[in-house]
Image (tube, rainbow, N blue to C red; front, side):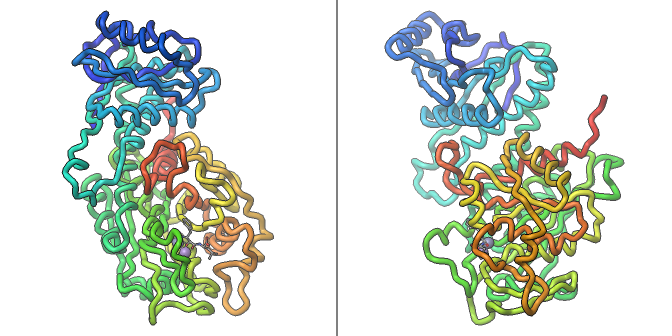
Length: 508
Ligand code: BES
Ligand code: MN
Ligand code: ZN
């Protein structure tokens, strides 16, 4: 999608996407008021026939007798004083869905519709442009690679978006739109990787995707195969992978931007769970919903995509991404319940449940992470079904032993569009993962509080690292009413990129 930023008075063509709060007059809208008389008459008649109230997410489509502006899409944003990030995300996506349904190719919007009168206008508009671009792209996305019908392939989609702003604001908005475009591309990459079925998206395919991303955006990638993992003592990853015909891969990505990255000696370190298919293993999952488990590498995809965006944004930071990738399958060579695995740190894991496999991969990744002496460690993982019960599908859970680290991750996620809620990782939960025969038990003694028990398990391997765990099983697929296509949502990408952006000291 081409994104343009132009001064308000420019001549443009394309569908108009216009945002309104209750009580605002559609007729006096900057673009609507400039329409030819015949079109304005149509808008007036349409509004007379049925009022447009302007409440949040209300959408009205008005077709016009004009070749240059074929349609006006009115989107309500509700009371402006109550317009928060999440609501605006949804309003932008609701409008985009209408454009999509109308098969609009080119759309134009006035950024001032969305924000008005504020101090630090430039900064606000820059961020707003980024948010609009990301959300248009999020709503526009659909995974169509395996659709063979030509009708489906040829369905026109939005190819250009023009943002109109005051002349003096063009530069700031251009910057925001460019950032948004880069992050939108990363979200698309993340969703494409995650949506690819398990038969194709094997650990090796994921590793190749990381290599490809590194080559095209500018970060280093090295891959460890099973022999190397064995030498390093990564018994937990190898254990998970042992039931599969696909070889496990440990993907290492390293990015260092600028001549002197601010944190050259202490990188940010992101870990993404890369289970390319989670059958549950010998503790086989029920059939219901198992097909979704090719999305169990969503955390890994988010880390690969975030590094791509960080590299393209040329942020002057050092970031390491680790993606332990394996397939969890039942077979004669699978790990059994009761097996005891030795991790890279020497700590042993008693496998009470082979379906609690994500934490096994991350345990070895946390052990490997220590050599980088990172200043921040965040793992992103579709770790537990329990997080869905706790939070629903609108947000993910964040946990950790160090409150300042958890808060930093939470705040970055919420600001960037990945909503997060903090769950308590009390020491009492750590008692639940003490094992009878090994050191740590992978599934805990209680069936309650599983997201926290998962975090308590990981805490045994994070040790003193400045670490936070983000359980994204809840946001892996969209909630009803999020205006997102079925399948992967791209959860985690915006949070990780925002963490890297926040690691850069701000001028002034
Ligand atoms: N990948 C699943 C978690 C999951 C469930 C992700 C639903 C997305 C949607 C994970 O590996 C798993 O199976 N977790 C178990 C843990 C249990 C055995 C302690 C779970 O949540 O049941
Ligand atoms: Mn599992
Ligand atoms: Zn899993």
